[in-house]
Every structure is written in C-alpha cells, then in structure tokens.
Image (cartoon, rainbow, N blue to C red; front, side, top):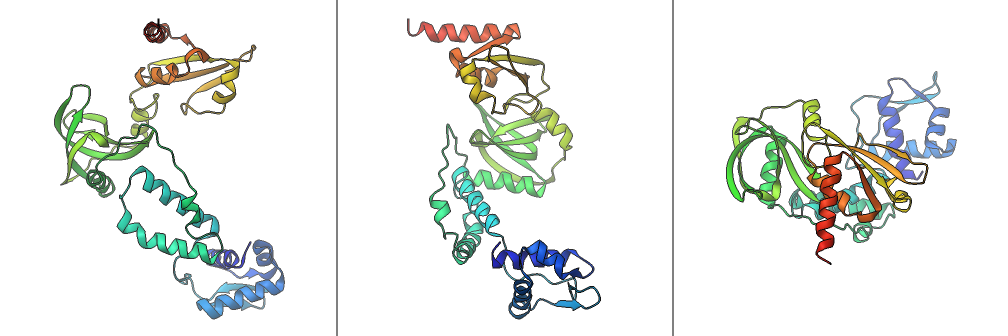
Length: 319
C-alpha cells in the first residue's frame, strides 16, 4: 500500500467512526509502522487541513467534526485503472456519446495516473476491444433515449421493424437501456401495443422526449419478461433445450454462461449437457448451429427437427 492509498484509507476509517480509533488499530489497517502513521497524519493536517484530533484516554485519533472531506478528485490506483477501462469501453461501444462531459474527467484521471506512476494514458492505448456485428445507433438518438430513461419521461419514436420493413410511430415509457452482443436496446412499455417491448436503438428513426412522465414497471416484472428466457427475445420460457456437447468442445462450454438459470452436468462418456430455458427459438438456433457437429439437440423434438432441417439445407449447398 503506497502513501496516497494510506491517506485515502485513513480518511475513510476516520470518517466512518464516531469514536476515536486506537493507534494500534490504524497501524494494522494501514499496514504501516508507528512512525509512518505519524507522518501520514502530519501530511493530512498540513496539506489537507484535516481536523484530526488525538484522544489521550482512548490513545486514538478522530475527526474534530463530521463534515470534512478530502479536497479534489480522489481514487485509489485500482479505481483509476478501472475508470480508464470503463471510459475506453464507452468510447468503443458508443463513440462520441459523452465526449464533452467526460473529457475534463479523463484529463484529470490521466494526471493522477502519472502522479501515481501508473502510466498516464498508457492503459487506454493498450486496451483493445473487438466488436462483432455491431450496429451503430445515431448518437443524437442515443442521447435522447438515455436522457428520457434517466429523467423518467416518455418518448415519441419512429421505429423501423426489419421483419415488416415499415416505420411505425410509437409512444413509450423507457425502462432500461441494454447493451447485448455489441448492440444497444431499449426495454420499454409501448403504449400503442399496451405491453413491454424491446427496441433496437439502431432501428429508431428519430426520438423526441415528451413532457408526460414515464410509467414505471417493477424490476421484478421487467426481469420476468426480459431476462427469464434465452437471448434478446423476451417472454416466459415455454421450453427447455437439452444440448449435448462433445467431450472436446465441453472444455470450453463448461466455463460459459448461456443463461442465468441454465443447468448443466458432465455425462459418463465425457460429453457435457446444457439445459437452457427459452421462449423464442430463433436466437438459440443460431447459437446451436455455429457449433455444427460438436453439439446434438436432444430435445425438445420440435427444436431438434428444426436444427436438423437447417443443417441439411446448409449441407445441400455444398453437394
């Protein structure tokens, strides 16, 4: 633990305690000697005007008043690195989204990283984020949707549905923004459909924040609708797919999470069984098909038949 970490930790300890903290306790918590603790306390008093008082009876230290806070922007080295990684991820997933708002913070973080000898700007240069099949939404649409979601206001949307290739006008109460497989979705209550729907942000053709307050849907209901079945297709699970992966492929699959409520087990011959609840089979079928001969759909029969038909149709193109 370096000097700045100890200063930050000492502040958190004293700010959280109503009574004096014994010197021995502080030395243990800060992993330092008596002399080092004395130097840290002196620095906090001299450079930050910290109102640290010594209580002779308790042989410990406390803040003279409860309102003291360290000045400026304070992060531990690990928090600084995490913030740098988070900023890099935001830049890659939604370029330009919060550039003007985050630029001052980014400059401050880079300065702090340099002070702590953690490589100013070096981590961002050496982070590589690979995106696959990402569809980029319009930045103005993203900002409007995110703003309405945060401020709990309704949205008027023009939405282009790929399946019917038409644009429809919707009024929605935004609930959550979801980043799934490199793409952004809005989970919302659609007042036209009178139900919960998921909207791909890249298909939104204009968004306008309305004055009307958004209707709030309970988290439990949102989870039941959007998170109980497999993939982006919402709904209550109606089926459970039973998949058997070969022993070779199992070495990878056993470490993967396909669904929060999946069940799995190793089979006697080294294969790996994965049981996944689903409502709509479309996305699940795509994920199964990419494993080709390394997976067998054991059930249900309808899913097994559909996968077999797709594999036969694919093979027929090469015959």
